[in-house]
Image 1 (cartoon, rainbow, N blue to C red):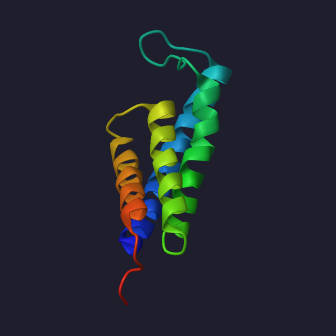
Image 2: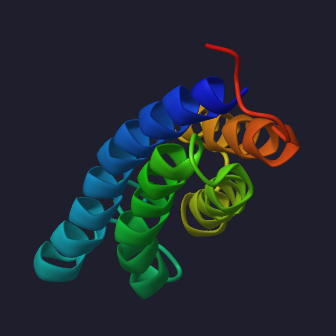
Image 3: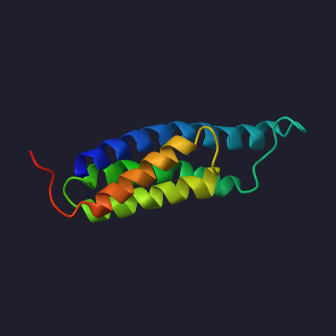
Length: 118
């Protein structure tokens, strides 16, 4: 279970970084170039998107990396990452996988009470 949490956390973190790059970039482009009505409009909370574009993927990567050694702490970080991605970006076609992977990895890490057999 710890190994699965590690892999899920790293994949969620990498996918979350891609979503974060685009989210941050979108808010920056709209801020600099202006809105195009009915086509490209600024999000309600650009600061939230920009902050969690960095925080959520880093939490997923750190949680995945910690899943083997300190599983419960890694699980909490993975669940915080999933919640942060949902809070900043919402649930959509590009965010459903990192949210689901981080959430599942977090649950697996929390319930991994014994070390994985070698």
